[in-house]
Image 1 (cartoon, rainbow, N blue to C red):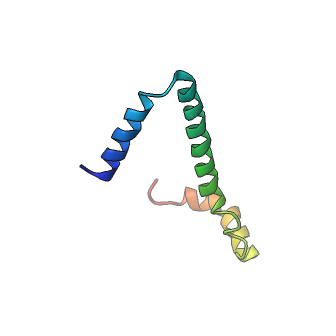
Image 2: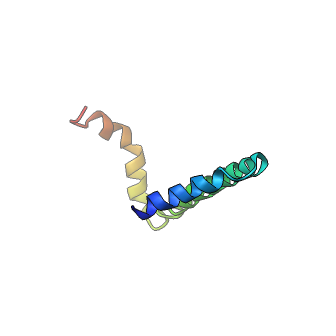
Image 3: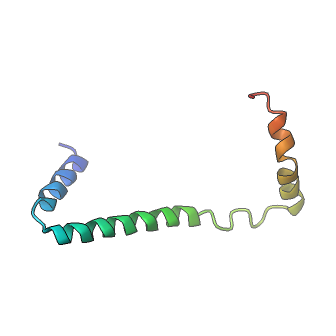
Length: 74
C-alpha cells in the first residue's frame, strides 16, 4: 500500500471519530491552508520582471496585440 493511500485512510478514520463542531473547524483550517498555499505560489513570481529592460517590456506590451493577430496558429 502506498504512503498516500495509508495517510488518506488514517485521515478518514480520524475524521469519522471527531465531533461535528471539530469537523467544521477542520474544514475552515483546510480552506485557510489552501489559500495560503495559493498566495505563496503567486508571490513566488513577485519581482520576476524587476531587472527586465524597460524598452523590451514596452515592446512586448505595445506589440502584443499585433503579434497575436499575426500568429499563424489562429
